[in-house]
Length: 274
Length: 251
Image (spheres, rainbow over the protein chains, first blue to last red):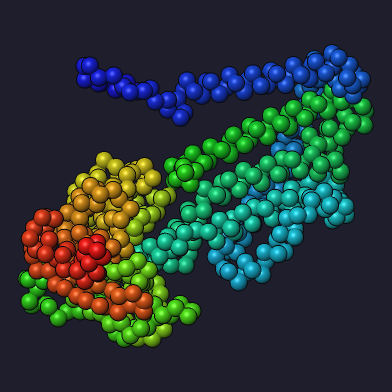
């Protein structure tokens, strides 16, 4: 950003823009350094034999087993299986949770009636549903999808409900002045007014879904990243398990990055600039 | 359209409150208050804070129902708030289009939009979002929106009080200029005596709660009025006198 100043005038101070390329590069370098430091710590723990080798595999061993899992195709298969289950469970809970949140947010009576029950279910760990999931849905994708749904629906609906309930009254007054009514009010005022929070809520519940998938796939599944970890544990292959953990972490970050892009849409940016 | 050249339609009523009472729990906000506003008139309501200035606007617009009394409205009412009245998820031109929703013909809508942009001189910001504009620019967009299409009555709730002093001065002239092009009936609430003296055809002073119209004064001087016009200075003195401010400061 070059500004032409008249001769003899120097800028008082250099203002560093918040997201200048130089600054962003700096952030990357720092996070890379932290990453390298953690890797080194891991390696040092192995080198010093703090834990026996079978209990804490070295980075090299993990890399090797991951390569094996990848070339045999099991890792890829497990990734696809897990992504599918998370996607279905997550989309189901968004399809039902967003309208439920909008509805509850708009009607005080309904909110008061449902809030205790929603909170009750929110505090039930999805793991508690495992026995029911198996008995109701047997094996395959369904129990895992059910668990993901149970884990994400309640926090999502609650977040959207409270977002709607806290929309500034001024928007509704303005809407009334300009004759927005019923359905139009919902789609042109209520929904865009909470869209930034909807996106944040979706990111949060996606995070929950991704965490839950590991536990969900430990029962009733024959593939998936969670199943892979469980299998590796049974065979005392912690090198493979650690490889799966790294994949889960990286995929989680990647998809969150993708969801973050939605918060850069021009009609929601206002919601994040405070 | 000012008090002076209104003789023909002097008695066309735009708004009327008759014997209106309102309580918030034990607090009596209004007890039997009455008020009439003529079509095309610019009425400024001034009074101590907490006396119910904003509540009068809410009653007039129908956002609040009175406990008793009668309220008549003749025309489409729009309100300008102190700030944050624009929808932040819509661009400047989308916000202004809100005011053009009643116009069915798309071509006419477009030409209306163009002429409104011509009035507020913000054409180059038409695709910006409100949070990307300054407070003064946002209020200019707000003025374009309320003046768009076929609104009749503007209720203005301290529309310039969140702006800095110089912008406020400019916005007063902007408002006078826009109303010259697009005459409307205006009820304008403020605590700013300068604003009242520069803008009003009639100033109403509200008393403390339960509020009544304690005093009123017409100002016939043509607009735009400069702050230093003798009529404006006179009016300011009169209002200050009425509010008891001069005496307090003198002591």
